[in-house]
Length: 458
Image (tube, rainbow, N blue to C red; front, side):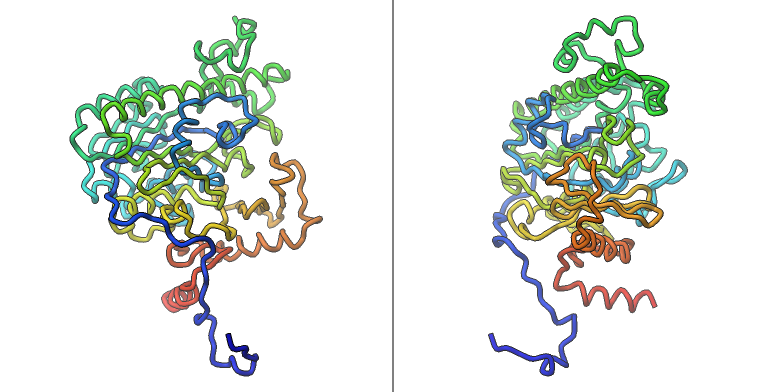
């Protein structure tokens, strides 16, 4: 390479820069047929660190999910875009950040102008079904768009636990076994109410019988959880442990029925022809930061969720340490199905990342609390930017429970993450990962895209 001086570079502009993506070249196999089917198993309110594949120290037992993950791509650092169901589901279904889809409050719907993932699946020729147990993910809010068959069990006062949803799913698959299909199962366990299950509760509370004739014998309801949050209920440590045990036993219960559905697909010869996605919409906290429930903070127990994708021809058995966003699933789906991405989608397909492309450079994960507070994770450094403008920095390698703000001790790392977050927030309404790259690792096309954007906005 010939050296140049600054005086010889006067004609060079930023847009002339090129970026070398680190890591090995793409290993994506060629001439691979798209999946015959797609199944999304949504586990409402499941935090990632309550799965042994994400946290070997957890006592939660999920043998079926663990076995599934052994033959799938597991994304270690996946963030949801919101801290409650409506916001995070809207990003999952549209591939858009909350600033774009605008689904932030009780009186908003997902706009018809956005193509939802079942609509994209229909565009690829798949028959679509959605069986959903979350009342917010309903036709009232526009989430039924694109489903040929759709039931929201809470809205229709039907049984809404995992056993009921799995039974519906198995019946539907039986009827459409010869079709190409897209099946979305929105399970509600382990969301409150945290219900006791005879088969699983003693895994987490050996002295289960002591709770007979108490408020915690059978479950922790939403009303009771509000009492817990306000400090009116569960004041004693053993009561708090019981509430947590009920949550954990719901995870094992959900895992059991996930295993039943996978066994059904395998028995019908469909499992290896089907792209199966396991994901959650947010987590729940259990006094790690002084409270319980969700929708109040941006700590890891709320925003980091499991994301596991299985389709052996495109998703190898591997772990991906780079940060990803759950909204990346929408373009991942269209990429795997071999159709163009939905218009205006802001996420980027995870297929290449799963196969080694772009691995090695910092790749952020981003979440927001109703577009007033934000968090970004880069490698092990996590910033929380408050509505007030104040920021906190956590070193997750040394402090995975986020107990110590190290912003003052690590000003360089704080500036690094804040700069990446600030760049994203400056263009979050228009940000397109497939064109811009990510804010900590911009694509070669970013300067030209930015220039075109600025011209368009004049």
